[in-house]
Image (cartoon, protein in one colour):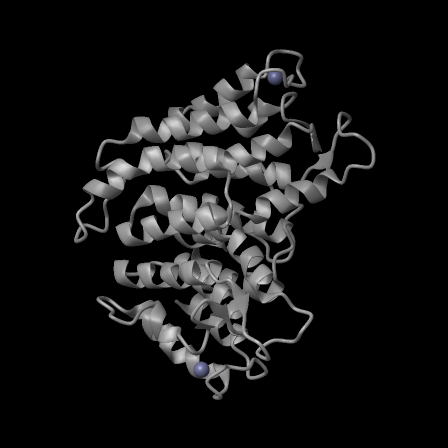
Amino acid sequence: MEFLRDVIYRQLTADIACPCGYPVTHLSDDLVRLAGAEGSTRHADAFEGHVFEGEVLCEPALPLVEICLAALTQELSAASREAFTRILLRIVSASGQGVGAVGGERNIVQECLEAVRRGTWLFYAEVFNCRAPGASALSFMILEKLGEDPALLGAAYRVAQPALRSTPPDHAGGSLDAVGEQWGAKDFLRDEIARQLPEGVACPCGESVSHLGDDLLYLAEAGNGSPRVNGFEGHVFNGEFLYKIALPVAKICMAALTQRLAAESRMTFIKLLDWIVSGDPGLDVPAGRDFIQEIKEVVEQARWMLYAEVFNGATSGASGYAFMILQELGDDPDRLRSAYQAAYSTVEWVRLDSSDEMGDDA
Ligand SMILES: [Zn+2]
Ligand SMILES: [Zn+2]
């Protein structure tokens, strides 16, 4: 909560106009209370007249997006998780911005959508983990509003729907595992691998790309004894140089991280993602294409899922590598520092502000 409190006080500064006429800082205490609520009755409507007015967004909407996303990386009660998700759904459903509330050149609706998009993979994880069934369903609706690929959304829906339906509301700890949906979860990843690595794309090693897809699926299933990052040498990268196939592989890593994985599999996917984010473009990337920028833009959509990993990672290795990826993406230095302090007991082995020379025994 220390991290969330920091985000709240940093985001809600006195220069932001609240339409109610009071300084926007008056929302801070409400948000801290909402994060700590057990069986809260306060929900999105409490922010009516401050953050939104009907279908219209007011200036505090953008800082509120950052706060809601930061809240969802923390351990919250089901009621609180649902409330923060509902605020985000209202913001992404807005149709316009308040006249006079924001300077004329800004398009706050667009800015909010872009900010929410950095939570994309966090929402997928929420759909699958069903910690709070209401929040899972609302997360799915947010993904729809973001215009996510209908094929990927459809796959997520098919997998998660039985679990969402059969999880009793008083059993927030329910998971896909608990309702025996592991096969479905595997299908989600298999579908995504097939979409990202279609036949006709060649693996840099010269073999059919299907072997790479099989290796990634095996990595997700095998757990202990699964392939290590260097098993992808010559297929995804060559030393620090990336092949262009690294971009779809990064997307597969993010999809894999929304699933419950054995600790060792999870660690390898995070390390592979870190390797890709810190790599250099290789020989098969056409000149003039800013490949590193493309990768960063894609992985930015995992920003808040990575923060959730920093705080709730299964191992300090997973948390630390997630933090290194965030540093590599060049995330906001204040937010990074505050997350580092809040998660210090798990990520102390990572150096703040530098990720390059960390010992990597991948
Ligand atoms: Zn207000
Ligand atoms: Zn290969």
